[in-house]
Length: 527
Image (tube, rainbow, N blue to C red):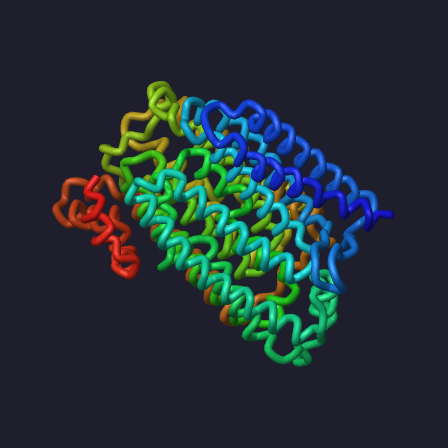
């Protein structure tokens, strides 16, 4: 009975696909029927996701029967991971579709846009709830193609075409990698059922892994990195700003973070080949630092948010690569909600900036200020960590990631004390930092408890793992020092020249532009 109830989750993408098909009948201005149906479909999808989460809480993890022939067809895998992702995707979907009703009011192709939004949401829901490898691959590819149609909603914009071309090329390489991984997984474990594969992987003894699994995990790693806009194939993401704002928000509903979901879904398999996880951690950690530094130089609000997403996806994959899978899921949820809201409210940033406090960037900070801020951040982390000692996971990986949190707190505190700052501002900053630290421990413990039935515990790091963690902590510390002390070098010619190169992403995107022939494209479309 429970397995049959799990199958009802498929009604959510079915309803969304129906709206997408009906949008052909009302593709134009103010399609009232499509607007009403899309609202009902997204709310219904959220309610079905909520029902699925409740079912998992009552009955535990389960997989629905395959709707198809043998193992080939559609099935739903309901566990803590898919329950969380379904709720996240459907909730963001409700907000984005509702927002689009007003955002595109008056657009001559509003019906088309709503239909494409619903189609993309349906593909993502099929992806995160996939119970078998075939559905996973189909939904993975469908998500990319549906997003491609949204990127080209204004096909007359050259920059939109460039972004779509680069995304298309990157996605097809990722698709090929995932298909190769699926074939190897099927050969190694003898089944398409994801739950069965994870069970076999969990029970595999050291040195007894099936043949081809190391290559399969490497292909999964490459597919995940390509999907989540990691260096050096990140260039399309900042250029997505040529599309309507709801698309940027929708990206965070299981699309740009689908790479992380893929690694987390196959966490038990990935642990059979630690070099693949190390590869993810290295690329993700570098991308996090790279994107974070470039973000600071961007004058456009939406482009800055896009670079922030590049950096955040890198940090999320760093967590995956270190084996902190539950923390990575928490990161996906928190970042998705925050960034979707940030994009949808980006038009109000000027009004917010009028009343918001900003640090005195012209002030000349000192190393003494930096060490004082670091000491305060360490004190907050240690003190609040002691209060939550019953919740704190003492795994070395968690401590290393906590050190990166300390770097963020150090920057926040240092900025509050720059220049002629009132003590009230410093006090409020310390209270906010203490609150954020406490929330970090509580949410970390809650995520670990909630996802423990579906995800393996954090593995004990090997020597390569320790080296990667040490490198990550040192690198984030160096960037923190750079951010705090940057005002000292603002007037120097060297810094001004470096800022130009950093603002252009160190030109890592130039080669990709040449591959997709953007120069010819721009010459034909000089606008």
